[in-house]
Every structure is written in C-alpha cells, then in structure tokens.
Image (cartoon, one colour):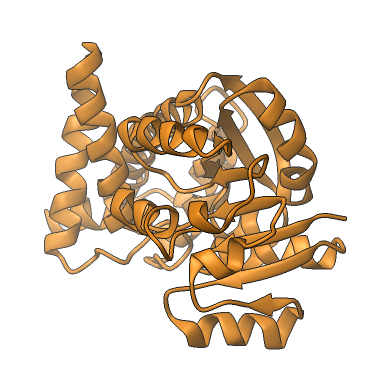
Length: 290
C-alpha cells in the first residue's frame, strides 16, 4: 500500500479520499477549512495536516481536487505548498478541472523538482465519486501515469491516458462542451412536452430507447420534471469550466457557437438565483420565460 496525500475535501474529494483509505492506503488529508479535514479523519481514519506541505511530506502520491487555477497554484506552490514537501520521484495527480495553461505551468515547476505531474480531471459527478464510478481522463508522462493508475483505479470506472501533459484537461473540455449542448436539448424537449400537455415521463420512456437517449436523460429527466436541482455539479462551476473551454477555443481556433450560447443561458440561470443549482436547471430558464 502507498503513502498518500489528498488535498481538497469537497463533494468530490472527500469520498475519493475515503475510497483510498478504505482500500488500505495510508492517507493524510488537507482542506482549507480545517474542520472538514478533522471530520473526514473522524469518519474514515487516516491523518490530517494543516498545510499542503505537511500533508505531502514523504508521500508517494499527492492527489488534489480543489476549485480553480488559483486554488491549485495555492496548494502546489510556495513554502507551504505540496511541491515543497514532496520528495524527488513523487507523483502529483491533479483531479481539478483547470486551464491547460496552469497545467503546463505546474508540470514545468514539478519537473524542475524531479516530481511527476499528471493532469487527471474527472467526470461522473458527486454520485460517481461516492460510488467509485468516475471517468478519469489523463495527461502526462507515460511512466508517471503507469505508476498512478492503480491508485486512481480505486475510485474509477474508467481511467485512460489520452496524451502528454495537458491532454487530460483538453479532454475534460470536450466533456463539458458535449454536456452543455445535451442538457440544453433535453431541457427544450421536456419544456416542449410540458407546453404540449404531454406526460413527460411517458415521453422520456419512449424516446430514451431510441437515438435521443443519453446519460443526462436517464439520470436527470425525473428531477428536471420535478423541479429539483440539487443533484451534483453546480451552475457556477459549469460556467467556470465553459469559460476555460471558450478561452481555449479562441487560442486554438475551434468554433463553439452552441457552447457560447449555452454559457449565456447558464448566466441567465445565475440571475435567477441558481448558481448552486445543478446543471440540469437550464429548464428553469425556459419555464421562467413562460
């Protein structure tokens, strides 16, 4: 079993770290809110540290799942950062969804210290983290990925190296681009059914078995019909991710007209007070329009 550190105990990180501890690894956790780290230790065992540096000290692998680019830099760099506490030969695995730019920056900073850096963003939502059914898309050196894969497999349904450093984050952008269009299409279909006086559940029972079927339809249609939007990834975080997608598209020349439009629709949801609603709340915007 390995000595591990896990940085960030949000709705995704806490259960992921829990799976690692349950699997028999020696896990030390860090969270910006110390009380969360203490609660995790009380529940799962293991140990806690008050800085990323102390959590990472002597760890074979350091996993991070924090909020954004600045949060990731904060736990990696500086005297209290994880890089300063890691030994040469250690592997840092970043599960945060961040820009390709910060991934490039941190890969170089880690390499200078003889630390490996694997970008490994995740998809599957809170339920995927709790049930160890995450899809993990990775970028980084082949050797570092090969070492880290058995650790990630503890909470993964599927784990793949897509390419060199940054490829994982680029793949996560593809994931978010696809989700944005799918959720808007599903929202419009359910809204149309409501306006037409149809039984939404009966409609989905039929169309989900044909070409219209999707994970979003299977897992979100009932809560969308019930006007219940507390099931996973929040609108605020989706807008952060779509902003990264659109900025990257400006750089590489990709055309993302639907993504740009849906990003603005999510902005409308935020104006409705739905920043913490899950991403399926796009239907709330349609209902608010009458």
